[in-house]
Amino acid sequence: MTAPLTMHARVVGALVLREARVRHGRTQFGYLWAIVEPVFYVIMLSALFSAFRGRAPFGDSMGVFFATGILTYHLFRNLTQQLGGAFEANKPLFNYPVIQQIDAVFARVILEVASWSLIVLVVMAFVILVLDGPLPNDILQCVMASALVILMASGIGLINAVIRRKYFAWGIMFNVATSPLLFVSCVFYTLESIPSQFRWYLALNPLVHGVEGVRMGYYLNYRSSELDLGYLLWWGVGSVFLGLFLERFTRSIELQ
Image (cartoon, rainbow, N blue to C red; front, side, top):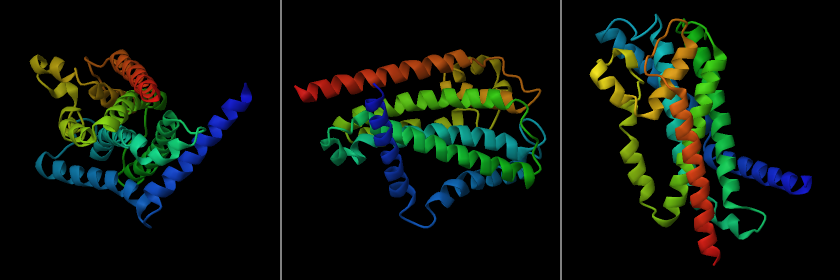
């Protein structure tokens, strides 16, 4: 019983190392850019809002407010995009019986979450130490909301990988279709600042609940009347089950 699990763990571990070398090892600035990008966004947005608005949408630190939104959005965006190409990038390896398609997905999830966690530590350390931001109030709440975003992004990414295997243009279509999420996921504003007659429609976007959930954990007095982490959980569980079903169904058809 333990032998197959050990073999599976070794395969996934080897794929993680391979993915890390391929993605970040081609240039000397591979890992550096992954950290610089969110820091650049935080600084740019903080400067723009300081010039035109004068204060943060919530709290005293613009850096913290924008970092919590941008990092959560980047987690969803990067994970769905990376998983969408998991099958295509590792296609030659699937000729080996020991390597399954789902192993490539697990490997990319592990690598992306590990990379994102490191980026969060670096970016938040920069925001707190350099931009004089406050410390988080409830780290467990932040982790829980982020974990639900990871679950949802993993499921959607797996669905993308299955569809993209048949229709390569799907990856481009998905990226274009989800680009507006940056502007409708409460990255630049709070959900409570939206007029009540429009707030419910915006709350249909599950990523809003991820961003708001992280901020509710970070700030002591943050309030969000429409926040529903259960809604985000259903999106995560539903997308994962649908992705696993589609992966198993399409693979069984190919074997016939």
